[in-house]
Image 1: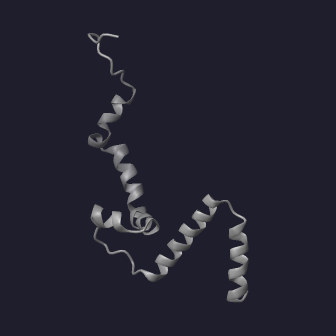
Image 2: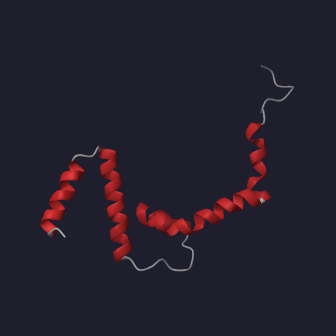
Length: 99
C-alpha cells in the first residue's frame, strides 16, 4: 500500500490529466464516499421535498436510490400515473382550427 502522501500525489496527477467534466465526476464520487462515511444512515422516514432539495447532490442520490425502481414500476402499472402517456402521440390540432 502506498503512503498517504504518495497516494495523494498519484491521485492528483491522474486528476490533472482528466478533462474538467471528468474531474467533476471524480469530485462528486469523492463527496459521495465522504458523506457515506461521515453521515449516519438515512432515516427510515421519507424526507420532505424541501429537505431533499437542501441536501448535496451525492447525498440526494443516495437517499433517492431505493425509491427509483419502485417509482419506475408504479409508472408501468398504475394507470393514474400513465393515463396521459396516450396523449404523447396525439395531434393537438383540431378540425375547426385555422392554419
